[in-house]
Length: 338
Image: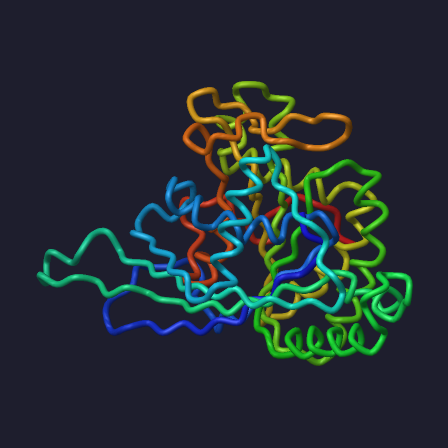
């Protein structure tokens, strides 16, 4: 996936009307999405349209519409479709001085009206303005280095880094993408991510929620064969898989700062699995093959598969509800206390 971060600044306006009961009230949803290189951040956004069309999300009580608001988001959708034709979901690394701003709107309309009072529930609408730039900006020595590309000047990188830091200070939520990936990969990335999270949590900021998105969830399905979807779509199994990830020594370095953040009375950490590769329709198996160490789509034709829950983090931020989803509060997971 693209070596970058994607920040989401969006403004929700809720029209008058009764909203469905929620487990956790929605908050100001200005959000930044971060994660190590190749954690699936760009593919996550690019897959939202297909996830909506295939209804491959947990919020089935709503009709969902995603509207493109600018050309950059259209290019994201086109990028995803092109990647499918190439039988892979990988994009070039983002240059340290490049920014794009894909914009889109998500509208949620409750399916069932209030028949008792003979009136319809009004839709919930969120307008997203996204910013995509290099994830290397999260690490000071990477952003300041002159070895990250001949075309990227040190001044331009420093300007880009200041822009990222400004967005992080203003946001109310962080989505942290961590891939269900091999240990050697995460071991190389965990220290830098831990350092960033620790420094950020100790600084002054407005963040109230952190959502840990365990991307590449299909990787867990390789050991289940054709039972992958049936097994991994269960809430209890998702909890087991996320607990196993946090139990690994490389992720325990990230777990400590998250637990300390979660202990604040006005802050919370949530966890959920997502998969851009998804699962194969009637087959039920994970839609991934590993060839020469690289993951490729097992079935590229989207008529036979769909992404898995990539919309859920955004719909959760809009509604505040975890009902019928695989989203867990960090405190519900049986994991070591760091």
